[in-house]
Length: 318
Image (cartoon, rainbow, N blue to C red; front, side, top):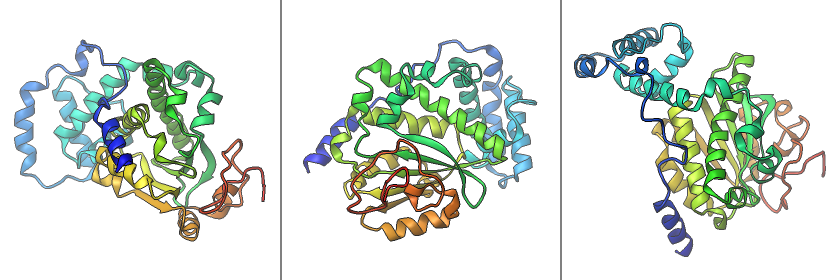
């Protein structure tokens, strides 16, 4: 009961997003001219059957043009389709989402800053972040050719230690979109549209959840949902302690139904199922040694006593 009360108190004060606010004025081409056509378009789309992908893209482009924000050449068709799918091929709702994304990208100068060094975005050495939240886009791919991203939200994951003030929290939230942009480069190199994520929760305990942690996690969830829709192909949590269920009850309220269906949480008491799930996801030679694979181990990865769950032993340790 005390743990639940603590989590509820922390969740109650989490702001909707820890990113800096958008500027009051955005360049006119991004939004002018759409208000008068919105109601008519909504009425015309309600009675129609869901269009196919090609029609959905065409309708979304037309809706953006009606709003004075034509997207004939940018974003690419695949990106336009992702936003259409995220709003169930509803052109009006997808246009709302895409409009907000374009404004968000302009406000944060995403296209300009995506090639900046990680330290410039984070405001501190990347090694400091890796000590608290180890993460890497591995060289392996799953059975569908999608890149596999590994993250360790375990016992070392103290966001309060990493972010002692609001500025550092905001920097970490900025870093989240920056690293997503790096993952998008990996997608382009592979010719893939989605990535899959494996999260290791070994060593996690409820004391790590505080206001800072919830702000960061909420911001990450919002950014991923609002600006990288349809990028997540699947998420597998391994070595999950029983207490993680309390946090999942909060986190899943931030996710849409489609995203929640992609999440698979496996208890630390069931290493056999974890191994089977990972081998179902990718061939052993595409998985690092720490995660039931035969590929080289992830470097500088946390080591936790392997009393239960998958062992996390780097550098070939046995």
